[in-house]
Length: 340
Image (tube, rainbow, N blue to C red):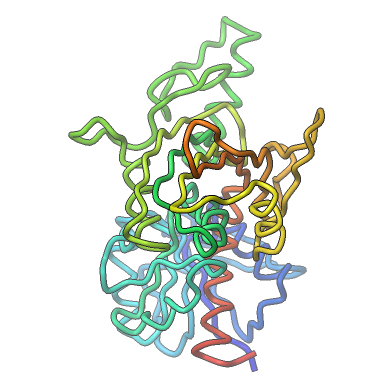
């Protein structure tokens, strides 16, 4: 016996990736509805060897459906998610709308799977920000061993994190560099993204941080431990898919780099590729299409008593969005709904 499953926003990058991952992981689906706005109504999407036509989100009745994976923006989520939840359908939301709601669990299944049990407060579970998701997968097993005091992270985030428009802008600007007659000014980003890096993701806040940086701080505390201090600098880079992070960690007690490497090798969702030689590390190009969060460059930080540095790479459309949502649905299945 499987699930009656809904994918909301099925025509977008993340929605299509959700469908791919549901098929790849053989999620037990008895019936699948794919929804989109009226602008995309009737658009065909693939699910395994099947081709499905999207239905109208505005008129869809969620009654009797088990789980809805939402891959639309906060405004559409605000309008439709409460309706779905009130009908008895459990919402797994990929937007930022509910992440900071104390009555909505924020879940990364490798890190805090038990949090799904709190879904009943609003019938909604939140998916974290893509840059947070991969970082906490790396941090949690180390925190369990030597309690983390402070994290300093610098991100190198791909343009796909801003949607299809970001991908198109990088592509068009890159071509225009070689054809100056066809100039492509910045629209999606605040400055040229081709052959450039931009230390600005989301809006600026009063203290000078950006909203993306604030998200990493607040979400890490909610998912792992409120006592962890986090400071982040988030940078958009001219990479199509795959977020990278340079992470500096300060622990309450000493943790040797070799032990940290062994711990991470055994951690769920983590793949350690860490050879001290040319190419003995993972880059964004190599992580695309993979489920794992890759860890490289694990080494002691000699400037503090109990410090480590590491390099963390993951496919942001997968672990940072679609995969994590599907994993939440799987966790719901084993811990709550018990079908399949």
